[in-house]
Amino acid sequence: MTFYQELQLNQAGSKNLLKKSETVKEKSYHILVYLVKIAVTMAFCFLFVTIFSILFGNENSIVGVVVLLCLMVFRNADLGIHTGQSTMLLALFFVIMTVCPHLANQLSPVLGMLLNIAALAVLILFGCHNPFMFNQSTLVLGYLLLYGYDVTGKSYQMRLVGMALGAALTCFVFYRNHKNRTYKRNLKDLIQEFDITSSRTKWQICQILCVPIVLCIAELCNMPRAMWAGIAAMSAILPFMEDMHYRVRKRIVGNIAGVICFTVLYFLLPSSIYAYIGILGGIGVGFSAQYGWQAVFNTFGALAIAAETYGLQGAVSLRVIQNVFGVVFALAFCVIFYWFMSKKKESDVIVHAE
Image 1 (cartoon, rainbow, N blue to C red):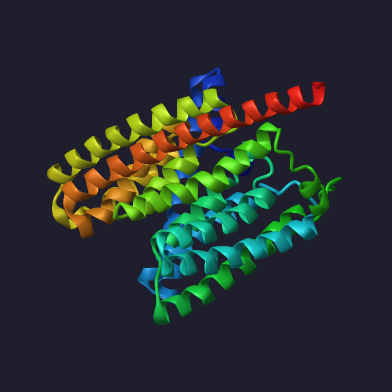
Image 2 (cartoon, one colour):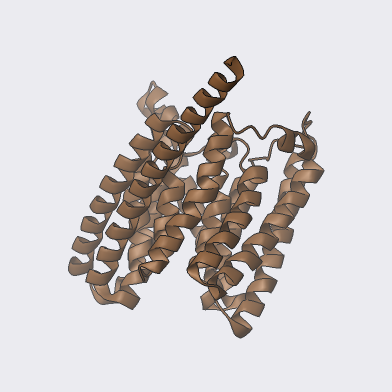
């Protein structure tokens, strides 16, 4: 494996190489590559988002984050169908992420929920057909970030331009990287494979319904940063209940631990470098291969931004409440939904038997 190829590995892949190292020299080499990868990734991310902020305004820096996520994920991940059709779907996803979150913010929480359900249905049914590729962590996360950091007027016009540029970049990189791959399935196959009795379709429906409902409830309760609850719910919903229980535990514990660590840093560090705590969290995520540790360090960036608006106590309270509510509601929703589907299946079997 070349130096460049090793740079392309994720955290788990890099740490696996470290574990398999047989000599000190070999381990030192893999550590060096790993550190270089973290440094290059952080520098590139910072530069990319900064450029978007300069071009489209600081209030649209989140556009840079969403576009960066899509570029980094879809340069390797695919949608499981013909490359040309996948590229057109990616362009459609950008249209949805650009328009629907903005429109939903203009509506009442209930009407906004219905629009969010329709938008997420397209993103998840056609973009997240393989749950183990975790495309929902890019598409749904991007949608929720744009929903939570909505803008209006001139800023929204600039957002339209920024997202159009992001769509062009993502589609170009995706098509270039996947054009030589052969796929046996197409868009029609995705539609035909929709099966309410399958684990995959049940998982998709839970994502489509639960995340917008969580957002709606948070907004009806006048809870700021409702997107945090939606992101927590999205993160917790997995095809298998055992995995969901694991995610819920790790998300709650990780966020509480992250809040404690952030609070300690907040009091120890001078106020002039509070903004850099978020960068520290990004570095921590880069070193984290396990979901629990990622939840800890993801808290840093969110709190660093929220503390400027709500103060430390308000930001910490919101973070804990929103995340606990999001994952617990998602778990309860999926348990009830799976129970209902199992009862429906039993009743259908009885009817057919009679």
